[in-house]
Length: 290
Image 1: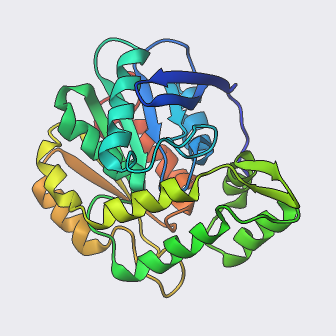
Image 2: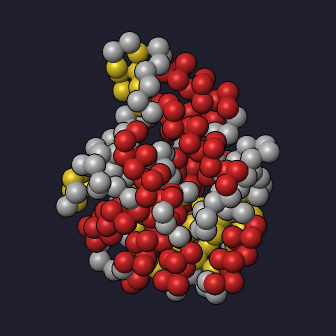
């Protein structure tokens, strides 16, 4: 079970693209850990990690990217990793002077690497969660299938969540259930996701044309790579395969890896992932701190 200990504060942050919703935990000052969620995820996907870090004295700020959760989508043609990275950079400057720590899951890892490439001195330490290189082809169909829920109307929140839970990828449900509930809004005939399917599909199309390995050279700071060692679903592929992991570690000498016995979703709450991130981002620790 996940036991939330820290108080969550809601913050609406103005950027040049509009307003982004953030969920904040831990002290109100200090070097922030800025958290960037995945393709169709929202700030609540970081609940377990944010609580763990906040309980250890870190200031944690998790974002709803534009078009996700409570952050409105922008005009067609204004999404993609580079636009999201621009938002991350603007928000990092708003949160305080100096460098931040940055943590991204799935597409959020690509956005985080893009932010480093655009402004290398912005990030003090970087955590990439189960994404760094080109995903294995067999991992893509489950990701795309999960997007079918967007813009669809379900009779109730229970039926919406039951449909997701039956697939079996979004584990543990103690984390992902509240994440999906957070994203719901009433609609004619029932409920639907707040997240913009158009924005998400634009990011899918953008990502399909990118080579994330071109961003690796910019990663000069300490990097922790949390890799899910189970496929996204039994028999499916890995978002971060072993070959991509090894290539990343060879190309980024400042990086270390923690193999987590979980899938792409479970890595976000696995005790070993919490321990590794907590040590790496300890307030007075360094890379690999216990």
